[in-house]
Length: 171
Image (cartoon, one colour):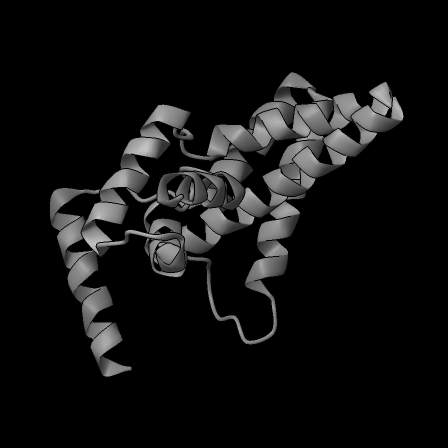
């Protein structure tokens, strides 16, 4: 406990000296909500409020203390984006264009807060480097590669894409 407090104090001192601005996802969303309200953009406002709601739920979840870390925020956004993409796919299959448009609008807003995703070629290069670093040579080593790749590529690619590329490269 004492060590973590010392680290926080040292970081705060460093941040103060270098004047590093830190803006949490919650603050960014709050600012975007204000802008959407001023512009009277109801679709964007609905998506932003959904993000804020998810953040507040995660912050008040049992056992959680304080604000979310950057990794937790990223994980939360990735999960919300994946849920909306899955819903959009279902709506498209069922021919529900009205609901599909709503989901696609929310996906667009979510992607503003997510880091840029890797292209297929970039993903292949990253995973090839990870395979070489881990020393994997066969499909039996997929677990080792996935463990490292999931951590290093979090937020840059979806887990399904990473898994498919690892399978392809190890086969």
